[in-house]
Image 1 (cartoon, one colour):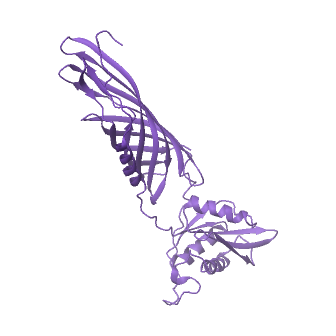
Image 2 (cartoon, rainbow, N blue to C red):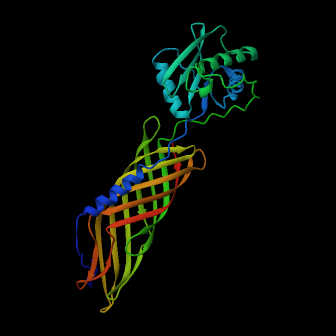
Image 3 (cartoon, rainbow, N blue to C red):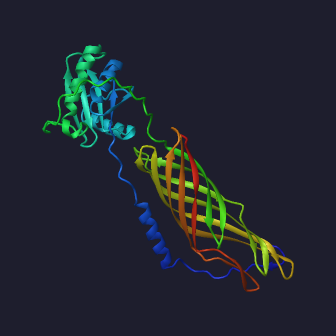
Length: 353
């Protein structure tokens, strides 16, 4: 502590019932999400380019988009084939999978329905690679398999009443590019936010990282550091500057709302290192103090995908401080912090690997 007046600590209090109310309201916000529309895409593995083109034509009339992959087809062994198909359906965000296998000179078509988690197969008389006529025949066989699944439109499924004449073959559609691997294991982020701190707003800058787990990478842990230029403190008895740095670990969840839009609620804590430094006005003597405080935090971010690795979003959070901080000069308050603090700002995040 520097020479001169010391800044008294003021009153302390534990979090009251108001904190419970704030936490409850924030938790309700975390539960608010829009139901995600069912994907209308089918992942096709193997069979060669003629087969994928024929699949695009055959499924075009059903408004299904073919997504091609060069992944190695699953071996025709159950239940491994179903388990691998389930993982790929989640990774590529598709309604179903179609793949061609050849085992001991026997070829077969396989169909996986992501909604029912069912696998069906049918033998092929001709192994791949297919010529154009054989590829068209194989694609029609796949279409027949899909009629017994939820991948097909409702009025095209087996047992549905006829509603229209047989459709003419649709014009060839461009086969979609491989959408790439599953979401990243690690992400870096930086942000800027305004904070309601002590009857005024201050600016907070942040930087951190998160690590994600599970097949969908939808549960993770993060660590973020925050700092800022601080606030000028001006009172009858004191003039100076308040500053703070903090570090915040958290548990996070990623909830896809639509293609390219993700909700990320989080729950965590923060350790705040605060300092105040200035001059007691009446005596012109220096006065300073440093403190540590903790908080419980709730936050939520809405991210919009900019590219394969970058996303930008709106970030809102709240912190309930464990102690009520009031700074005193000669037993007179000169600066005090809110026990409940709110943040609102923007963040930029990037997938690392």
